[in-house]
Image (tube, rainbow, N blue to C red; front, side):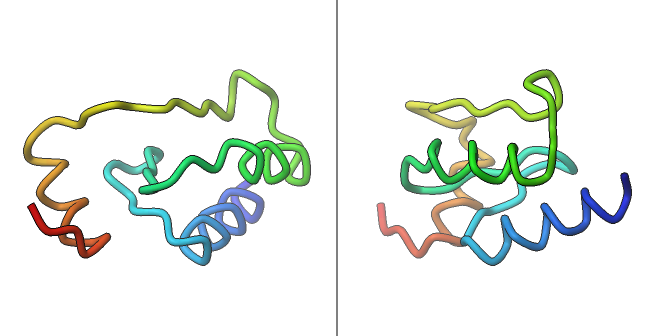
Length: 73
């Protein structure tokens, strides 16, 4: 499973995701359909691969994400 997880992490980085925790990634745009394809391709079950749309982030995460995505306040 380690190789699959590493491949998934590499793909998320390639797609422009920002890692905020070991297994938590964010993106600045909706991309649920692309994530569904990745989940199916890598064979993850629903309980192993969750996708959420957030309207806000904790302030410390928001600052780091804004810097990563080059967003100005």
